[in-house]
Image (cartoon, rainbow, N blue to C red; front, side):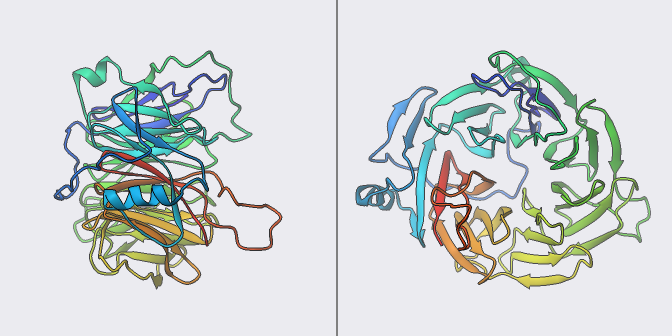
Length: 403
């Protein structure tokens, strides 16, 4: 069962397309149709691409498999003004008619969900590149609001998948919040998720009952920094803990929470977060922060002590970062604006592995997809990073990078 948030709410929708399994995603959106982040001048939209063709839903689509990018395609990318650095391939590109602010793979990587500025969510079949569903109900029509986050519920063996009919793309459940809901995160193994917004609070929900379990917030003491003092844009569960969360926002702090306690236990200062740009490594030991800052925006922190481990090499264009994620244990990816940039970083060398510059708009969201097409489980070599999807302006890109 999928979920969606609209007009200060979190809404559960059936996202499955021609499937007999019930999957779930969460989408949050704010009431205002404008993005609640710093206003950045937009670049011009992409021009036509050689391999593009018109499809339904008023988009122009280009889709091809890994390894099929020849010199003609490279020339088309140059004509668009894209600047590719390193061995990176654009596998597919879908261009729409309005700005795309968030996206998410389904757990099986069969589909990509994209969130639009008017609150609509569309589903893309990755194998065909076709749109196979539009999620928009009467509440969205009456109270349009920007879709700010989409998350797919992790389906674990302990959480059996129930059978359902072909998807209807109807709303299944709505949680209304009296605020602008700006982001959310699922626990990777437990039926819990957390939402964040403009009221400085973190709301922790039981995913099965949809009940609000706990509100995490700062105390009333002005002399103690034990919670946020401004908008919160990102939160992340520690994958090695059942009750620990970190969060970040406009108050330049990363707060550490134990959901059994109402206030934060400690914090890191000097990190300005404006999107889904904090992450915790799979072993639960390191934190990645990608800040909206010209100076040293990408940093690694020790989770246990909160001390800085390393400052990663910034891009030469000093992009202001909206999003960032660990990509396995060896890489990280990030994206931002001014300049409009997507980047993959090798965590061993601490340098850029590949990048795409001069994109049609700011990169607001990234999601990590299936393994690289050349990935071999029995290989002794370090595997290349998996496929990654990101949104820029009115366009969704799916890329693959070689080591």
